Amino acid sequence: MKTVQADLEHVFPDETIARMEALYPAQAGLLHHLLPDHPLLSLEALAQLGEGLPGAQVEYNPGDVPIGIKPADIPTNGLSIGETIRTIDTNRSWAVLKNIETVAEYRALLMDLLGELKSVVEPRTGAMLTPQGFVFISSPGSITPFHFDPEHNILLQLRGRKVMNVWPAGDERFAHRVEHERYHTGGHRNLPWQEAYRDGAQQVPLGPGDAVLMPVMAPHFVANGDAPSVSLSITWRSEWSYRESEAHAANAALRRMGLDPAMPPRWPSYAWVKTVGWRIARKLGLVS
Ligand SMILES: [Fe+2]
Image (cartoon, rainbow, N blue to C red; front, side, top):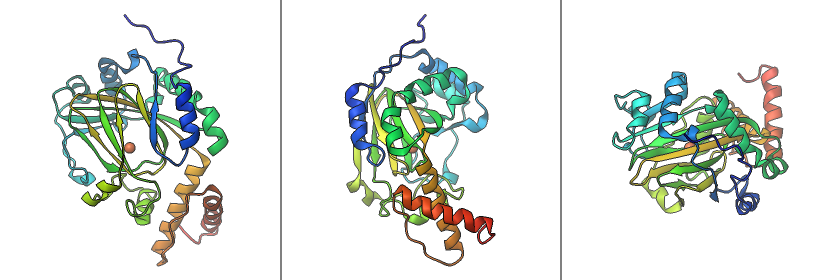
């Protein structure tokens, strides 16, 4: 029986740390990892993890959905999460286990990995807040529809191959400010898709040992290769990302009042000013 690797100090090689220094926080790009075959990340371990997590932390569905599918149109695959993971080779599905940090062993793994990145992250975006981990398990050919996420994220490819298709965060040609406002006031992560977007994609092919740095709110979709895929996503938030989120929510409130606020620039000090203004307005009862 394999044992848990005790020394994870060098999961991210020096060249990846240097690459992150160039990319983080604004640019997507290819990184590498040395995460060994880890017993916590075998299909059987993940199936048991999925069976033990609360239902709200598990999401899965058929994997052959259109890139631009509406959340309400996503069908079920008719299996349990455990069956979905154990038979991922053949069931044409896509699954995510969310917030794996709620389980102690997985939290320890996540914190080890994030700890290696502190020297890059903290000088640029401050303390690493709200560490969260997600595991994606997907069948050959499955698609993760076009969407964005609010976290700073590194996705580590563990098994199989996939292509991350990513667009610049904050470029309204691919995610209009109204979509940001909708998301930051409780809307779904999926975004409206147009085939014309394909020309503007940055494509990052991923195999085992590869990883991709994903900026906050960068629109993306993921296309699996012809083998089952397992990926581990390690994420964190920053004061900046929270302020940007609040700036969009503030704009949504202004839009409801009949105004047409501009897209907040992706710049922390600006987002901070706007957020403080919004907090004051909220306290004064000017917005809800
Ligand atoms: Fe995502």
